[in-house]
Length: 425
Ligand code: ATP
Ligand code: CA
Ligand code: CA
Image (cartoon, rainbow, N blue to C red; front, top):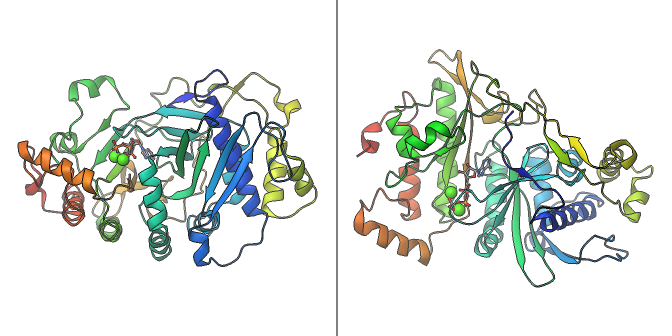
């Protein structure tokens, strides 16, 4: 599998940030997880747990390599989301993110300036977000929780945690942890980020030829004459879930989101791959906390089990220091089978009208769902609307956005109908 991103070694400019994020996640997680699960209360939605790390350490926080502050937002809510609705195994989650301090940095693919990091096994994405997005997520957390609870197969981004790192000179970095829609075991041959807007939504085709990882847009989809090939059942299910998700986004006044689609062509397989499944990385071992060691000895809580496994995995004697090989799974790990749209090898297999399988597997979901229609976006609507069709530009009010989004998604499904509206100009 072709890996995207650059591994963050100790000489990387964001190594300290990564170290602090992962240390905070690890300790915050363990603190919450050490307690017995209980039903959520209203206070849980506004709770903030603060940690202050330094080189010395204390009862609550183990010593760390750097001085920094960490905040864990609504940890009980995210715990319930992870375990009850997103079916994540707690030990797995902790280990994927922190058993080794390895992340790879994708950099900042969008216009927003957010940075993206992948966990070492490629299952999770850490996205740094703007303070306004952070505040917004907290303000809708209850609605989001309710929506996810009522919609076990939602296609919306799965938020697993919301955190903040504060560096000594005052820089605050907010970030979310979410699902990587794309699987570690399958190459993605084409990627589309679709909004239903057709103004300026094109990645230059000439550049796309030489860049297999290009994120293509609405006009590329239309001009290439593509269709989502899904049989009647899958088509109906996908349309209905998208309708519910878009309806939710309209209710919370969000716009500018996309349907991200990664396409894996079975026939082509993973063969374009040069560095198949292996990657050289630098893996420092993690100091485990004194308290964690105590908890881990003989405990049967998920935390104790997780920590024991983490310690086994990060055993410096076994690992040694220096260059190591990072392996990605070659097969579906099966952790997404519970979900309708992620049931075929972590994605959705294309089917014909008789529901027989076709060549493609789609990996899809609705991403970038934290932009409410506020003053800034209204202004953008005004300016962009001067030189282009007001109804085809990206920033439109949430009702119009969701309606156009759904119409577009129906139009791109084979047999979905209604394509006339989205002809390329
Ligand atoms: P902007 O606001 O300018 O659109 P952004 O920084 O908010 O950008 P996103 O739109 O969230 O970024 O994502 C940018 C790109 O990163 C997407 O087009 C996609 O290629 C990749 N990406 C984002 N989220 C995921 C995810 N959950 N799984 C896989 N890839 C993702
Ligand atoms: Ca986006
Ligand atoms: Ca964004």
